[in-house]
Structure formats: C-alpha cells, structure tokens
Amino acid sequence: MSFWLDFLPIIIYILLIIILIIGIILGVKIIITLEKVEKIVDDVQEKVKTLNGFFHIIDYTTDRIAIATDKVVDGISSVFKKLLFKKKKDKRDDENE
Image (cartoon, rainbow, N blue to C red; front, side):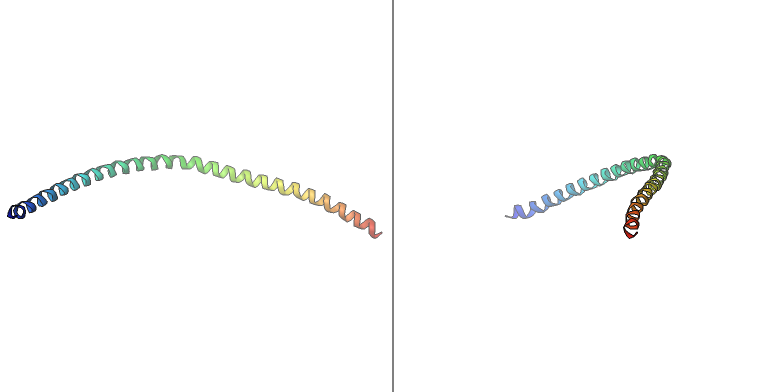
C-alpha cells in the first residue's frame, strides 16, 4: 500500500507535465495557423476591394435601367388607363343624352 502512495503522485505529476507540454505545442500550432488564415483573409479583402469599382458600375447601371423601365411601364399603363376610362365615360355620356 505504501508503494501506491509513493508511486501514484509521481505518475500523476508526469501525466500533468505531458498534458501541459501537449497543450503548449497545440497552442503554438494554433497561433501559426491563425496567422496563415489572417494572411489569406487579408489577401481576399484586397482582391474584393479591387472588384468594388466593377460592382459599383454594375449596381449603378441596373439602377438606371430599372428607372427607365419603370418610366416606360408607367407611360404605357397611363395610356391604357386613358383609353379604358374614355370608353367608360363615352358610354356614360351616351346613356345620359
């Protein structure tokens, strides 16, 4: 029994030292990996910034096309409204006379 009381704390200390060393190694590897990921993210951000001008031009163009088509649709719908309401008014005028 005294053997276990002397031997067990030594084994626990050795295992704790091994776990501490593994934790330090994993921490260093995680830091290295995060630095690599940060470099990749910075590179992607630079590439996206170069495309921002292109996307701005596309956005501006689609906005202008949408405005133009809205005006055309409004014009056509107003012409149809005038034609339809004139027919109804003409029928009412004929009925009143």
